[in-house]
Image 1 (cartoon, rainbow, N blue to C red):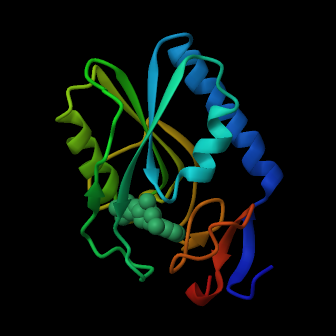
Image 2: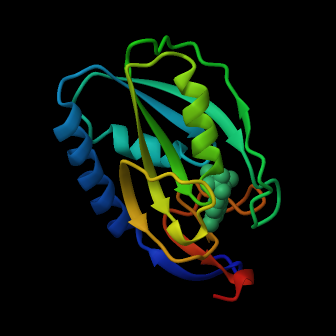
Length: 177
Ligand code: IMP
Ligand code: MG
């Protein structure tokens, strides 16, 4: 385990099990309907790759970029969005996928932005949720795990652009948790 990681919060096996369950929930709600999965880069790429392999319906994948933290562990409050979408989402069901819902600013901004593209409906799915940190009133439609206020890394989540590759979710050492 890297020295920056204090302890493991969710193991690979726990993650796999929960992602499988999330996929069943999504499958149950959307079935064979056309669905656009919009992944917020870069944090959600591993979650995306795992989730879609448990889905059987016809899914289209698109990505959008957002960054709010810069190099800190406290949100800077400004979520920058970079939209280079090629997929036409007009009148389609869109499921926005993000790694973690923290203050809620990023997801709220992305939701607003996507709304302007005229989708049929928007749902949100986050792998982790830290409700105690919320600043904007937003709740995910699908959520992997609800966690306490820890800065976590791995499974796509970074600290200063590193540690995304850890196959588990770990709590960052420097947070003193
Ligand atoms: P929000 O706009 O405050 O909800 O921040 C959401 C974004 O901040 C996520 O997509 C992550 O990129 C980042 N973030 C929030 N909490 C953590 C964390 O505990 N570890 C790593 N990244 C985080
Ligand atoms: Mg990040």
